[in-house]
Amino acid sequence: MCRHLGWLGREIAVSTLVLDPPHGLRTQSYAPRRQKHGLLNADGWGVGFFDGTTPRRWRSAAPLWGDVSFQSVAPALRSHCVVAAVRSATVGMPIEVSATAPFTDGRWLLSHNGIVDRGVLPVTSRAESVCDSAVLADLIFARGVEALGDVVAEVGTADPHARLNILAGNGSRLLATTWGDTLSMLRRDDGVVLASEPYDDDPAWEDLPDCHLVEVTPDGITLTALKGP
Image (cartoon, rainbow, N blue to C red; front, top):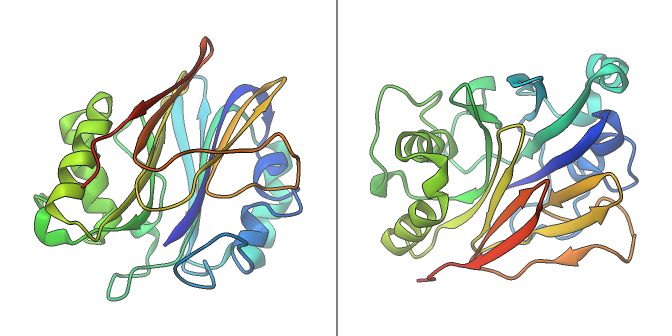
């Protein structure tokens, strides 16, 4: 399992989303509050952000809580669209930078919070890693992120035990699915946050229903029900 977060709105410092909140991803790497599977997210972390229309990534296979270099630089990293995650590796999966979200196809940044049987996924040489999340990301990119809801419903039907919370951003949109795990949303004056769990105790956080596709654009937020298993 993992914890992840997405931002779409005005340009802000990455540290204000990942490091500064009292229950942000740094804290969730060692003390998540709503995680149902696993106690720690110590198997790596990744932060993706957009430099104009170009996705950039900073990833590590070490725990986020100990990365002094990132803590020093994060206040200077600013973006209008961010996708970040801390990782708890599925048993048997490699712990390596290439297995750490966010994954990218050069246009989208994508994170997977969950687990899936690789036996139901096509395996290609394009995947960044052999881990389940990287192979799933490769499938989503191959099908097109626009078809995210359909892909999640199909994979979830093929593997009834899968947990398929996906979060993806392309600089102008955020897309997310809820499928077997938590996702919350915070509507701020300067943008929208989607997160596996709230990063603070603001009462404005909303818990989103399971088996839904969420789309965030500058024009608004849309929730669409997915056909569950």
